[in-house]
Length: 373
Ligand SMILES: [Zn+2]
Image (cartoon, rainbow, N blue to C red):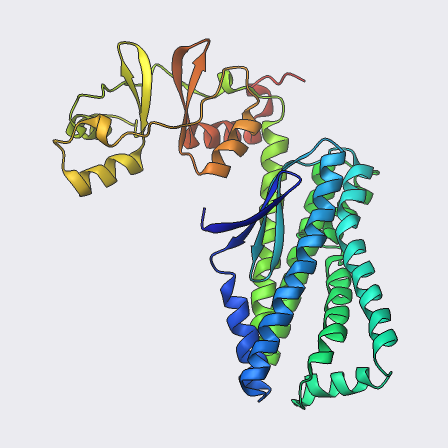
């Protein structure tokens, strides 16, 4: 979704997000115009950024390989303008496993940085470092020999920045893993999330004072990352041990594929239901979501048969499925609703509202829905 696949390594697809070229444009402007190096500077900026992202892929691969080692699952690695993200489905539960997995990335970046620094010393005279730093700060002439020291320094920076003990940086996971040895996992997370949000505020204010747009963007990135991780773990803790059968809507109103879309609109207006299972002779053949209804109305009007606007490919859940797992699967593909099916028989629908309801109920009154360990 919104990304382009580059290559697959160890069955992990490596993708580039559509916003990724923004960082290349930024680099071209920064090295070409701001530092007054013209077209050569712009080209240098683009090349050095692409090489840097190659190092970022190695960093994310290191995390991913450790995750696979510990029985986790890695869906993909996505390159965003501000860095890479390895999308993992199951993150190792044991604190020491999470610790090793989190450290693998920064350690890899650190090793790359040190190796490149040694290579620079080996290939060039020592004064390349001072020349390079002067060229960076005062806009002196850029030389292609600065590629190596630039990559060495940025990789070392990457290692250091990611070790900051705050979510969503790797250091946040390290901190949580360490805290989780002396307190419950959810409290350890909450604490690491707070530290992340605090750090984001500091970075953001610093960015405002120094009028550094990139720093403000990084602050936003850190803040949303920390908040998301916090919500995820809250949700996971709240829904732990709950099953789909405890939350789904039994016997929802069913529509037929040959009925006009207007019929579904009538049902929506009549009651609280906004997503519909589409059944033909008792067999589930599709799902009609609220978004589907609205889009169909706009494009074809109320007379169009439901079969032309329903979703034919959709997730399904079984009543004994883990509620949190299903919630994760739904948010990964952006599904609003999942039909619940048991041995081929359609039982009902699990909607986003059902999930939120279950979440709210167990947060307010935990013993209302009994958990199974
Ligand atoms: Zn990392």
